[in-house]
Image (cartoon, rainbow, N blue to C red; front, side, top):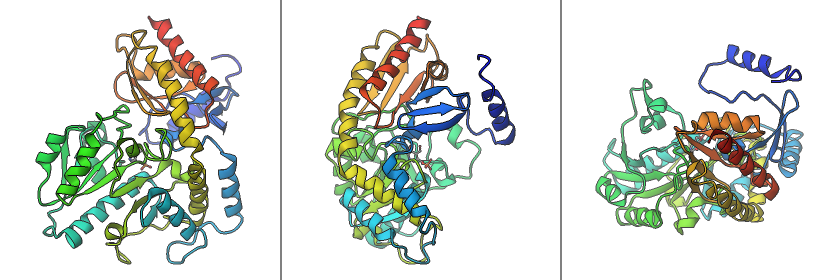
Amino acid sequence: MTSVDMRTPEALADAERWTAHNYHPLPVVIAEAEGAWVTDVDGRRYLDFLAGYSALNFGHRHPGLIAAAHAQLDRVTLTSRAFVHDQFADFCHSLAALCGKDLVLPMNTGAEAVETAIKVARKWGYRVKGVEAERAEIIVAADNFHGRTTTIVSFSTDPDARDDFGPYTPGFVIVPYGNLAALADAITPNTVAVLMEPIQGEAGVLVPSEGYFAGVRALCDDHNVLFVADEIQSGLGRTGKTFAIEHEEVVPDMYVLGKALGGGIVPVSAVAANRDVLGVLKPGEHGSTFGGNPLACAVGVEVVRLLETGEFQRRSAELGERLHAGLNALIGKGLVAVRGRGLWAGVDIDPALMTGREACERLAEKGVLAKDTHGSTIRLAPPLVVTAEELDHAVAQLAAILHEKS
Ligand SMILES: Cc1ncc(COP(=O)(O)O)c(C=O)c1O
């Protein structure tokens, strides 16, 4: 670091001193952000190629979203669901329409939306499918990431996420991702739902082979099982379509949404499904003090409006081709594999060169922020407002750190 780097070390030490160490952040302390760029406390600028794990699909401080939040801050911010407020119906209606579903249930974090989907699927299993009490099973995929609650980590296969957090919630069956025969074998008369990510983000942006989700849909139809798509990270424009599952031409029974739904401003999540599914919930059976609050709904309405224009999906599809072409050209030059769709890439670096963590540290030194997952894999997910030049710049920085180590 140079002599101008006055504030970063102290800010890092303070954060380390006063918080639980449940994260291992890159040594960057962000003070301001706009669009695809963030600026640290010492004035250095970085291209944000993580975008809050896709919570910032519309970029930092998108003007339309900020204006919607400001306007709502001046009116009413929180009512609880004990009363109805004037932003609620607009948000639920517009999101339901975007999903092509009858009903929406808003929550806050992604994990809460997943919990909601699990509860709704179980309730549906008992009340509609006729599964015997306490016997409902939900099938999930190995290497999944659906959040951090005790129930959700009960069906994680990642020891870091799961170990020493038991006793675990029963009722989940884990099958290999992408293997239809294993899924068919796992379905029993007690199966109420299959819960999966259309693309597994945390696992390294794994895209299953073509036809897998059409097969999942068919198995669910044949056995009267709900197909629940966790689109929290993959949805809302990230892959070049509104929902990643659209690439498979499949419609799930329930969408689970989060992250970008809050426009990078407030936590907003939701599930969307038809009346025969979401209608199983009756007053008092599920809820959240903050879920569907006026500020969240005002921002959420604007998020849906942005998605209705199709501009972000288009940008992601077009620029995604450019990103993937640039990354694929580095295979054999330090990269061993590239996966993903749209502006979302899982990049496997040659483990002989460096770990994913080291790659992210080196990229940060060159002004690009990205995040490693397991081993030598890093994820690239810039805001969908990124420009072609910014993409090229980031790929050039990746090429540079690979070149420097080879
Ligand atoms: C696919 C998926 N589901 C659920 C979650 C949990 O969301 P949250 O961190 O908002 O609880 C995440 C977060 O990364 C995710 O990627």
